[in-house]
Length: 478
Image (tube, rainbow, N blue to C red; front, side):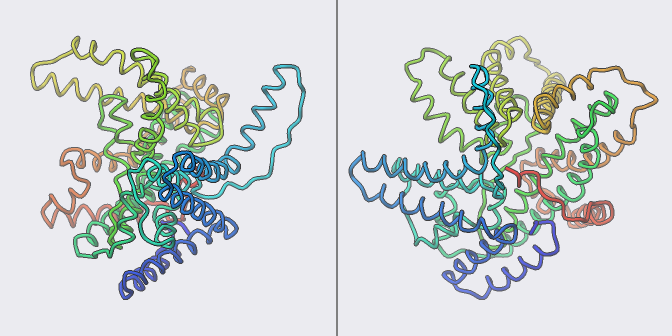
């Protein structure tokens, strides 16, 4: 079931109807069953996999909490990491490692033909694995205590709005909301309904329409003109944002309607002036997870390395793993390394650069701000090209075609007009959110007549011009 499908609408209405009449304990049991039904609708064979990871994390965390022996605690942590990372590594990275092992052996003259395994990637495995890992690690660090029953923890682990593509919620934030009775009120229902509507608009009208521009160009970049390729790269940057932010907004909206507060995953990332700020606003649940569970521990491990060198090493390792988290391919690793290099470069030049350019007038400051925003967008678009490419060789083909001669008579100018038409509404929405610092600015900061007109226009655009076939969300493959 996709969030943007009729089947899911029926499913959620049934869940909401039962939720309204059940007591708290009954709500949790029903939500747990509904979450497993939701996941099984994709492939029932992988539902036991979630249960296995859930049981392993719960048992290991309980043993870690009860034990006063540090060695025992460490071994239970290793057991939890082994199960969760083992499942993730087998299903997502097994063939990648076998392929690269074969290539490495070939460099030493050992010719091998390691066959690829026929492995189906479970939906959302990277999301629910990281969610489980954070719980066990927090228990080990003594920053969190086990709470609730096993079934409460199982609901935290499998909560259906988050199951496929996050956000990657922490147990310290979501689990107390599972254990304690939740309050449903008009404000939550209003905000939740708006987030669902906004997310569907981002997906159906913007992302899925832009996909029709992007897909043909990336499928065969050599047959398109440089201008077409540039338009497709920009279009994909908006597509990936609206596809993923759309999913996150729907997930937050579903949670709000049920009385849950789910974390913000995107915070106007196109209105940033540097790469560090970008990663504080883009896929926040992943970047903050990597910061807390990888980057900071790495900084401690590398403490003997002098100066900023340990910062640079920790950044490059962390960003490379962010890339690898997205997929078992070198172009994802290079995607992460690209941002790691940008972050290192930013740290090196930020002080000197700000002293060189420091406009005093309001007009100068505004020009300098928008110049940096535009520059950051282009840097981001290049990174997203690496993300969208099928391989490094494919990325090379895209780049060579991008810098080739453009014949104006062969340019698909309809690509440009369509991309502008579909991207313009989300740019305006993002600017409004940036201006008011509030994603709910339409329903909270505008006159009722203006609000009604905006929502009616968005509905007309979505139902009149949107892609009404239920298209899969991009991040389901991760």
